[in-house]
Image (cartoon, rainbow over all chains, first blue to last red; front, side, top):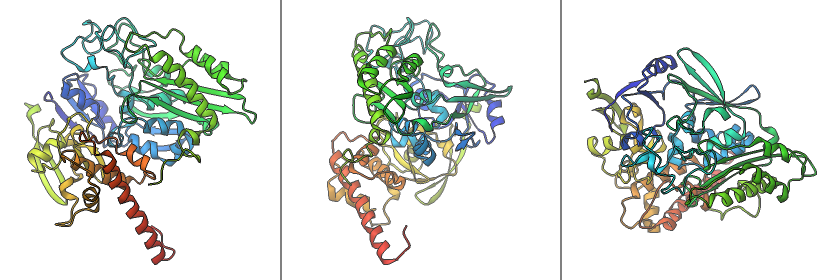
Length: 343
Length: 174
């Protein structure tokens, strides 16, 4: 790790003042940042420790959910309010990383984590995200993990988060603050597509820091939501494809509202609202779900090793919607018949 | 050079108050092994992928390789050295022996601390839960079934003890 100055902050304003230096980064859990610093991918000259400035609440606010940027992923996912009222979010968080990492990682840090593209991590190779203008070896290289939607000539990396996929589906808002004020960023606009500036992951501006994330009331989706994550092993691996699906069904199984967001397929959580709108008024059945998957995956393109993601994503969307239709408890393995062997 | 500055770090390690002066970039793992003499905690990948460095901070399991020592100032750290009481093994350590839950032993300190954290968290109700919630600890010898056995056995012990307490203390349930 490169030497760096370390500043503990006990108040938000002190942390924001330290962030006026563009080469200083905030550190919360540090689970991704320190890894990147050990590899030499990120070399901040200063770190400001924001673990003691508060902002760690998980609470009901204005009829919705308020998540402090410094609340830990584990504390968020296991919080009774999140478990009971936002099961999609709880499931998505628990599908990510390991228990140790979830105990460390903060909610703000989850949004700020960087791609796990192997070329981004490998200083011996070119990478437009790490060193703009050097090229993208992933396009013709090992691209099994890479994007099939929204990619550009210069970058085909994916955003690795599970939590963000659920936050996108649930129409969350990211609240940020700097020395010059506060603003709210709709989740759809927080992460960005790579275009010709793949070094920029999101729309956070220099000097800004995430203070909290708000999620509107999602009561209509409590009974029919599912987070499906497909990966190379059963646990503790990044998604090849993940799907956050939530349905509001009326008594006879007609769809009143739908939310579908994908992870592992693009530089940001992927959502096509037209596919959701087209489901309204239809019966929740396979034919409708196949149509939705077709719409969501329009324009999808593989790069060789990741060609399998096209049918995989299609099947995962149908499976997630089918599972959501059967019910949230079914998705979580809590209904009779799918429960694991008792300990 | 301000970057070379030594930061004072006070930690309670396995019940003992210790004070160190470390550079900003020293991880908790390196402090434990190189400065505190606690070499029970292992450095496997140093990237948060293997779990060999798992310790408990204020009772919560974390990867000590992915946090800075200066960030843990004032915390209570438990390493594998702190699990036993004198010569008496922690019941989980005994369960690992009883279940043959290791071969080479390199991952074992991390497995033990992780399992203690898992038990503290109280989220595991089934063997499948145990397997999922131990997934942050790799064992390249492949002792996973026996490790799960040991943790499941511990949870059973706790559950049966709770039931006995419930009967003997009447209405007072923990």
